[in-house]
Image 1: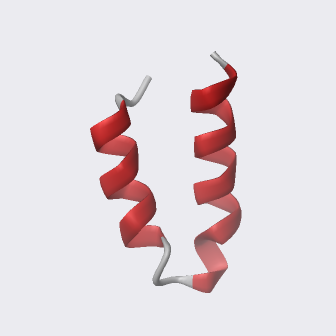
Image 2: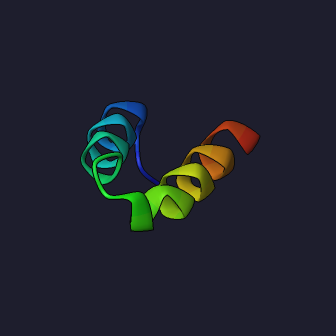
Length: 34
C-alpha cells in the first residue's frame, strides 16, 4: 500500500493527464477507505 506522501506525488503527476484522473480518484478513495 502506498503511503500518503507517495500517493500525493503520484496523484500530482497524474493530475496533468486528464486520461488518468480516474486512477487518481481510485487511488485516493482506496487510501482513505482504510
